[in-house]
Structures are given as C-alpha cells and as structure tokens.
Length: 404
Ligand code: ZN
Image 1 (tube, protein in one colour):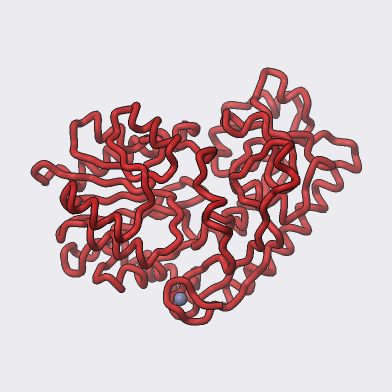
Image 2 (tube, rainbow, N blue to C red):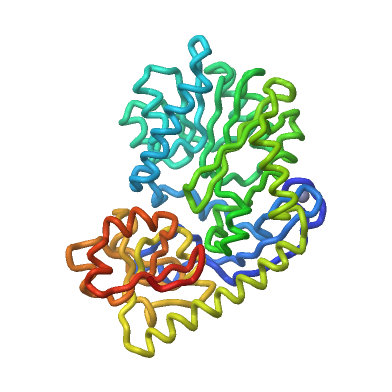
C-alpha cells in the first residue's frame, strides 16, 4: 500500500473490519442498501503519517444530510468563540484591515464572532445545509471544497489571507491542501491547523477516533513533513482538551516567525516519550485495540447476563467504530440518546440501534448508560448528576474501561 502523502510504502497496522460511514445515520428503508468499506490503518515510516489504508467512496461523504453541526455542542460553541477571540488578540491585532479565512467553516460557529467584529472574512464549506446556517448568521461563505485550484481562485477574488484556520476538517489530499495554503496565505501570514492528536489516540487507546472522515491522524512529525514540502514550518503549538485532546499547530512560511519553545518541546516529547516516530508503538497499539475490544464485549456481556438495561449516551461518529468493531447492537443496547435533531428518529450506521431525543424519562429506561461522548464526560456528569443519585451507572470506554 502506497502512502497518500509521500508515496513510500505504508506498513499495515490493524483492521477494524467492515465499517459503514460513521455519520450516515439511516432510516429503516435504507438498511438494505447500506454502504460498507474496510476500516484499516497503517503507518508510513518515511513521513510518519498514520492513515487509513482504504478510503470510502467520496460520494458517500459530505452529502446534504451531513449530520454534524458545530453549534449542536455547547462545549464546541464556547471553544470556537474563544478561538475567534484568540485570533483577534494575538494574530490579527497588528494588521491593517486583516482578512481571515476558515476552511470547513460549518455553521459559522467561529467566523460569526469575526463577522460580529466587522473583520474581513470568508468561510469555505462543502456542505450546503450547514453553510446556509452560517450565511444566515452573517458569515460570508463559499460553498465548495478546499483544494489548490479553488485556493488560487479565492486568492484572486478576495486577496491573500493574514490567517487561515482549519479545525477538525478531514481532507482527502493533504498535499494539495498544503499547496492551496501556500497559494492563499500572505507571506507573513499564519496557518492554524487544529486536529485531534495522534498521541492521545495511542496513549488512551481511543481507537474510536478512527473512522472514514479521519483519513489521517496527525502528529507533529507528520504535519512538519507535509508543510515542509511547500516551504512552510511549524513554529508554535497549543494544546486543547477538545475531542479527547487536540493540538493547534501554527505554521508559517520558513523564516517568517521565530520557532517558539512550545514547538521545540512538543517535538522532543513526541519523539522521546511517546515515540510516535517508531513502528513498534503502532504494532503495540494494534494489540491494545484487540484487548480493549475483548474487555468491552466481556463487560457488556456480563451486564446483559444480569438483565441490566443499557442505553447509549450520545451518538457521535466515534460510536460507529466502537459498535461495529465490537459487534454491539440491539441485543445489548436498547437505544442511543442524542441531542442532534438530524440523528433523532434514525438508526445507527451498521448496527441499526435506534437514536432518540432526550426526554424527561430517558434515565428511567436505563440501568447503565454507555457514554460514547467521553470527551464531554465532565460536563455531562454535572448536567446528569441525578443519574448516579438514582443508583444508575455510567460506562466509559476511554480513556480507560470503567463503570462509574
Ligand atoms: Zn509517507
């Protein structure tokens, strides 16, 4: 298998088996036509990129029913408001009439705070339905995919950007994206790339972060390699708790920004402590995934043997990988509760567990709630404190398997 970044050979690490599209929550009449592909990961020892070995058909992604909407999550809403503020205070303040571009601007959760400050901006978003929500919030948006061709057209039409921001966007061709950034960014501009960190996936055995949209899980080393190809370098790092641990990478044209301690220290830690540049780290991760799966099946099987009622709490894309890899379906989980209207009344991909809206009775139906949105655990435990008080339990699979 060829590496999608550097063309060297990728070493296969692990297969999670046949997998549906993680966000393709479906209706009953769609069960018979459901699309599956093999979800498997590999590691390229040359460019250090951890990647999916096989990609699903592009047409299966980014459809109009795209069910993820940033503002559906209060945590992410606050995160993006703080991101906009940080950009204005640290990176745009010194600029005359700055121009900021966000790639994958979704419903405008970040850019609406830029628009509110009357700062020149442009969102680039391929999903028409969420882009429309952004435009209704006053966020200027182009409904298109980002690639190097579109980047040149946008630079011609709007001028080059002082700051380009990308958060949790899942690109197919990263080399072409890097080229697009090179075309669209001013010489002294800053490209900010935020994504869940591979190091956290490996140390927490958070294999549920692996699904179709996450074609790559990035590390410092892989980001460094990709952008070095277009004359850019990483000069600063910030860490955030979102998505179970994300990194905000700051990248500029070579020599334009002093390399900060944050970047030097992060790189050293990744190489010396986490050893993300070594194949052995990933082979060990594969073994841990299998052990994690066996442990999960045993735990849920024991509870069902005691006739306990288990429901799912939250139906993120991540839950699709867990349910399908572990073979957990309606024999184990009665239903999954989720606050996103686009998922409610539908069924989970692959295992077809029904997704319901939270109501006042949701907790009455359950003895145990399997917390698929473990990355929001603290906020949920506070919000749902009565669940524990009623003698019921949470099941967590990440960062470790435990019953609370
Ligand atoms: Zn490679």
